[in-house]
Image 1 (cartoon, rainbow, N blue to C red):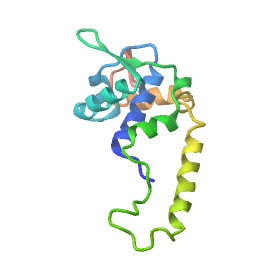
Image 2 (image 1 turned 45 degrees about the vertical axis):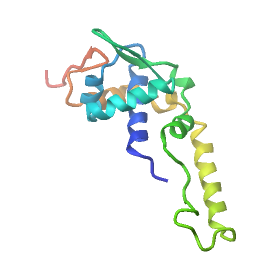
Image 3 (image 1 turned 180 degrees about the horizontal axis):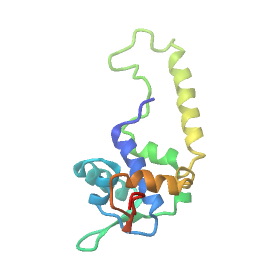
Length: 155
């Protein structure tokens, strides 16, 4: 199974927000630290807010933060809600000549179920346990993360 870029970026945004939990983050900050275009991020954040994962505040001094604690964000659920379709094969378009007698659909269905069963045991908190390393990686080439100044080792 291949996740769409939208889902991949959604997970990255949630991880970033999970690292800087109690701070407001702007689209510009996300774009700079995640190296994702503002345009993509605007759509992603809008969708995550609509799904209830992110709270946004508009205007000067605005930004976004997680709407739930990282322990309450289930990764399997995020993927189900951000992926346009998780069906692995389509037996109807184009019509398959062996539909109805093929065992592949059942095997793939079991694999998909195992995939989500595994991800349903993972929370955002699990993905951001290594916060110090994530902060350093997110901040590479940046001067601030979550409103906190990052000091270069060369200074």
